[in-house]
Image: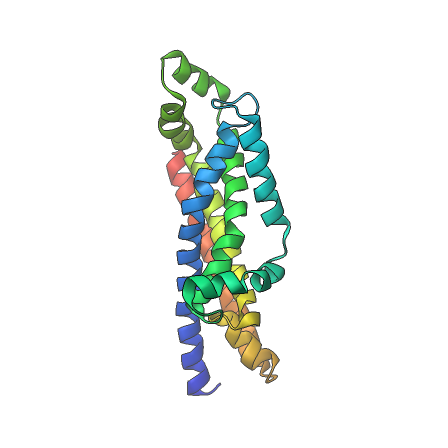
Length: 216
């Protein structure tokens, strides 16, 4: 491979990591509260509210059902409105964030559901408010599962970032498409794929290690 392509791959790694972690953080900023609400308002929970649960659940399910490539295209006008462009690294963060929010919400909900009912009952019996119970009992108890879920979600965003190259997004996905696919440079394609696989494995392993430490 030429020096130019090697430099492009280096820049692609930085862009991919930037897209992945910024989008994951933004997705959690919205998706985690949504997941907490889904959990708290479900039947038999601390803040049971059927209407809120059904409406929010419907929105999350609709967003989850959309294939990411279709979501990329659908969000082009919104992406232009937010970033002023529909191509590039920054623009790719918009669909990456939106596409990850419903996944985060459902995974957070599932993690919170794993908390033993006895812990919640003990907290309620001591007179703790629903919000206090959620913040000081349920979330800390579910932290190992939440960390593992965060690693999985971040790896998912990393996979999505590769698809963003289809509509002009940056990162390794764009390099794989431009050089590996359009120009038939197989060594570039396999290099970018290998790098993406390694990055996914490292993120997931980091999540597992953090979860284990938190459990101890």
